[in-house]
Length: 199
Image (tube, rainbow, N blue to C red; front, side):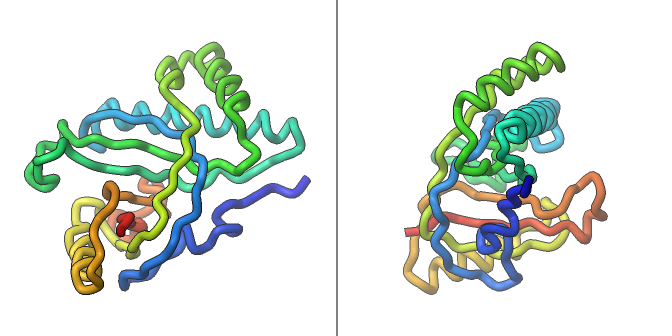
């Protein structure tokens, strides 16, 4: 059985370089879970665990249907309440939506089955909050950030300057795609795609 690898099938989605690039992102389906809190907080970390538990259980069901796939990279949208400045807002008030992209053949039935199994067998009640959602950013600008998540300002500034110079406007939340696994990669070597939908 051939295993589908979305990272290889959609290289534009999962690759970036140090200079801003404008691109058009296709509609996708993602497993998602949302919350509020700091990235090193209990809510965020527990949500990552619940999301991965459901993703790998969905993979198991799809494999039994003859459609195996590699679970792609973790992603997240980040934002704060309207009127607030992100950099000045306490991390405890940060909003986020964690995501893992799914192949087109993954259905709500697969997800419902997986959620039920994860809750029953692994006792991860938070899995009940995981949903399959359509995401469509469309026209976007992105850059590859290297290093700590807390030192993204220069990379973000590159995007903002590009947006300004090209007469564009932001049209969505701050989006991060975690190319590196922070549990296995030195902080200074982390690779993260930073993306903003624009219009």
